[in-house]
Image 1 (cartoon, one colour):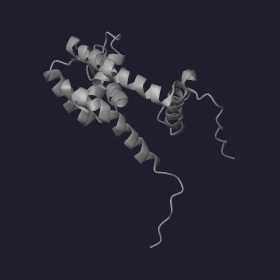
Image 2: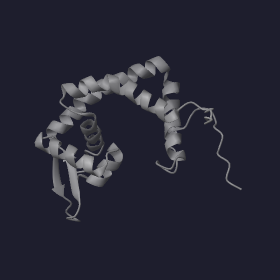
Image 3: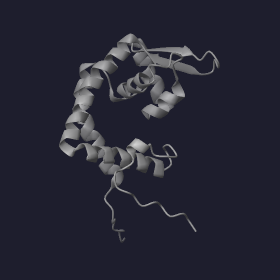
Image 4: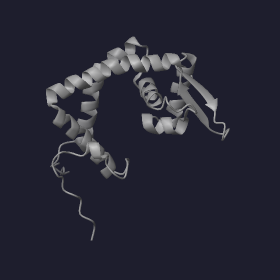
Length: 170
């Protein structure tokens, strides 16, 4: 059997390797706070939506934290048990559940955000501000290109050099 040679590097593997490299710095801090990666992703989402007093629907949390529904259910159960979140039925639709971070959950977000932001600042110092902005912009473009992101890349995330636009199909 003849194998087909690949021309391009394995992008999914490189993205996973980059994620694991970054998380290798973050995980010890998460463990110090008694959090799993998944719990952190949920708290990060809830922290980003802390201004929303109505809470965040679990479907949105699942989407933004990249967790499947059954996994999210278990994660939320443990987080509620540990006092990190509150769950309630949605007042407008009792079939839906909304969650919000508790004061304890938000305190963990605040504490962890300091060390995570310090690590990002270190990365920016090593790579340079422009390269870091370009990295964010390229990732935003890949996400949008593959159809899982916003229709338009945020202006602040666009790379500094012009990029080629994909030609429309004939």
